[in-house]
Length: 460
Image (cartoon, rainbow, N blue to C red):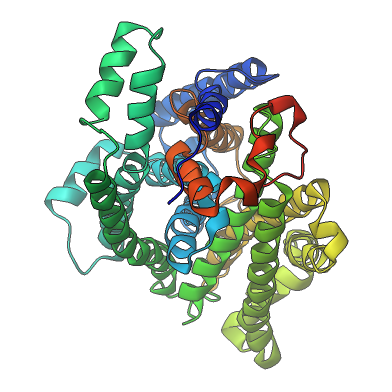
């Protein structure tokens, strides 16, 4: 392996360390704005705890609403870490290196709020203790709790392991930092000296964890699908729910990954690390996943619609031309068909702006889709709704629900921003290692020396 010239290595480290604690334009505004939304959601949750779930629109028939819809959305988005860190690692995709830490940050934030959403849905959250002490292994709810907790712990470890060499670099180079930070970096770096043995052990540990966490990640989404598939409701009684959730998760995770790296690329001026090549490759993945998800939608809705069995008819009519028809067709057309058409053109895949537009459409469709999976099916049980009190046979979320839901989404974005404050956005040691493997001449490393002279299309 060819060693980089010291000045080139130092330049790369200085550029990437420059993102630590640095504020990009408008960041303060967004932090304050998102923080205020979180405060409003906390106040709304306190009101809900004091007055009970009666302040929401959830009743006997729709016992799950926006909260559980958002649970499925967060669980889905969290799969992006397994896709980038595990699938692309095992496939040998070299372009993944600048994306790894970003993907793991998204996973950590998403799975954290995914675990919090069922607590919001509980009228007595302190009784969560009894789920642990008196939980039954026969219950899919216990499966989901164990899977999410395991996935969260695994994601924390996977976020930390590739961080160790970077912490050592911060320990050695950022000598002007406050003493408490230097002590924290020294402690977290666990004596890293960047020798051959340590690198070999680190890579072996990352490979083992990669092999372990991938089936755990898939199981989290499959078990979430089983939570509704094991419940006897029209529209849920389907064996396709497992793969439907998994591929929907991969699609939504890829879309949000594109949006985040686009913002970081612009805010931190990382155009020569997060290049159009990364957007193009992610756009191809998004195209494949969106096309396959459209195929799954045709199977999920088209096959029952062809038969129009009595128990499924009411749900399908509601979705096709009833009160939820606009949301349903918006999801299919704007969230799936139009992005597929857009991303099928090479010129669009070469434009970061249009890739971002397509990703926004896919992500919005995925968020609405989670709502359509939950609410319409609960409003059409096998036993017809008769003599129900006003408001019990319908679902219109209250201001409390909207506020808490908005604060959860804001908290998800805010946590990602905060995770990038104490650590480099991009994994330095893996980028440097890849540069050394490919050689200075192959990558045109002379362009790295001067940040101002690096063209936007340059690629590591």
